[in-house]
Length: 455
Image (cartoon, rainbow, N blue to C red):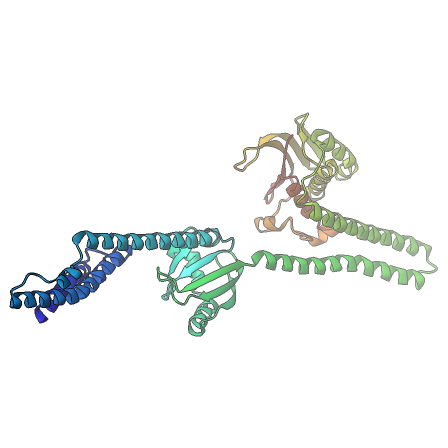
């Protein structure tokens, strides 16, 4: 019995020992193929152990037959050894089952990768050592294409102390943790990070899933809203306080002074007009913002609108002794476009050039065909209005289209400006799917360019 047992074990151990040698020599690597070889070795051991009983039965039957001088008894024939074909067929079925399981696992892996790749929010998959194993396209857009290799943006994110504390807490407690982060570089960002521990870890070592939500836009909108309320209340409070003060003066000390009454009434009329313009601009801006995502209807003959607005502002040009030069290409029609809003854009830009240019200076206006400065290569009309005034410092340029932003607040209020003209202009141009650009050099002048698509 013992020799037969040793024989059976040798038969089963041969593939197991061979598999072990292959692993030691690194001829094979962990994977579906290695799992299949392991199953084959295990099956060989099981078959060898089963054959042990049959071999023992066959040996006992042969011993009885030899002792009695008879042939091989029927019981030896009743338990024949499995043939090589049966063994090969069993191994083929086993290999086929393993291949099907491997294919199913691969399909699941691809499905998981597809889900991760198509999530709209940035997602990072980290190992226990906090190395980035995978970053979906949204994360690469947010943190740069090298995010999976821990580029500078990803490294700055992962080094954030609040995120590090959240990852430690998630690993220790086994539950998801949310952290609110402020990232100052390369651009200021407000990010909400949700850290989800994975237990058990993924096959590729993934231990932490980090879902990022960029709240920079919401934070900026909230700051803009707060600034808007503060600025609007301030802009309305100043002329209102002036009106109330002059009314009190007219009721008291100036009640019997006709000259003072006329002077105060003139100032009150100016302050009332300032309030009216501010309210009109606020309502106009609110209406334009509501319509910003709705394409305009109709068409706008640009040359005709430009000449009409220049003629309407002729008294202001004459008052400042300014000259106007125009180089206009006729028959340019913006479409789809709202003619009234296009006229407002031209009026705002031209009035700014007149108010902020130099006395006795020159304003140059050009209107011509031009291709959009983006990948669309659309044909459109480019309107440029340039003055030769004192110009604007570079650090002011990015903020000129913000509500109530003024380079020189005292001068702007003296000229009757509300601080909303360029903000309205920007929203109208955006609604028309156009482009607005402002260039300025101190001591030389300012140029404002508006590109609008043609029909």
